[in-house]
Length: 383
Image (cartoon, rainbow, N blue to C red; front, side):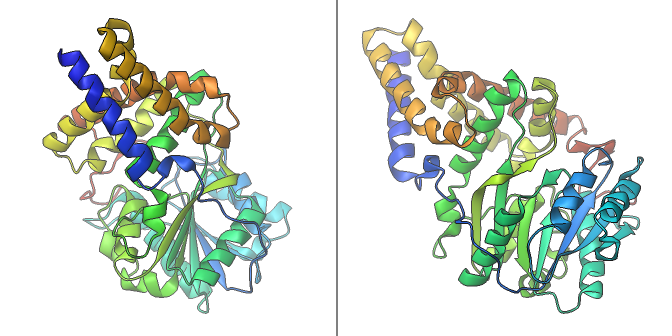
């Protein structure tokens, strides 16, 4: 009886998600390719130990078809490898040394999270070097940007007079674990922050993807050079909320720009999620319980009820799984994967529930937000 009731709740929940959750599953917030207008922008790239990928990332920014061409500021945040040298070499090979500046991030003041302090340090130098800049592109050091797509983002921001325009780039899906989990990650992110609602000026929903964020300089001045979000561990969501309080934002899905970072199987994906999932839940045990129970109800429970439930529970579970497959198919299509990967969504949901629980455990043990040898508690002193 209980399993039948839970199956009915799961079926109704999926009906709601498909009909009334902003069409998040459609994956339709995609830019039309078009040339960028003349717009003075500067790029800020926070980087820490990114020697293996930063050259390709910087090169993709330097060749972007923008007018005037992008000036790039690399904020080297205590790298222990050849990040700075690799970036300079990439610029030299492209004969664009004059458009790249590498700044060493100074010691982090009390109250600042590591990445936000690196972004703020790069921002200060960027606006000093390009005082006429109207926009700043915050770009992660492990992303290869599609030049035409970046131009389209600039064109869209200018045409819509946006204060923030952001793209969720394509994740690297090398290996079975990545194919199982990473499209599901994008699917879950869209469910949490329906892109249509984020892009609607009348709604309060706000989100961005930190790897590619184009912000207007006036909007950044309203955040006091990022001081308004200085302690944020999830910097992209915090910046989107701060900016949307006073101006329009837009978030879409990239089709050409891509992450260069492989996660090395399930363990790497697990570390990525567990680093910040509990922070996303505001470190609240109640929100943690609600999130984990909701994930179980929506994803693994229908598959279990199909096998273990009575006839009614099995019928409800089967209908729910069909709704899952229909909702997930556009995301799989975006990643060029067979619809059969949708059969793995219940397992992916169960794994993400476990990662979220592990994230809470790590934070309770004082090991939350561990990133490249540094625990970012948001109130740390100098690194």
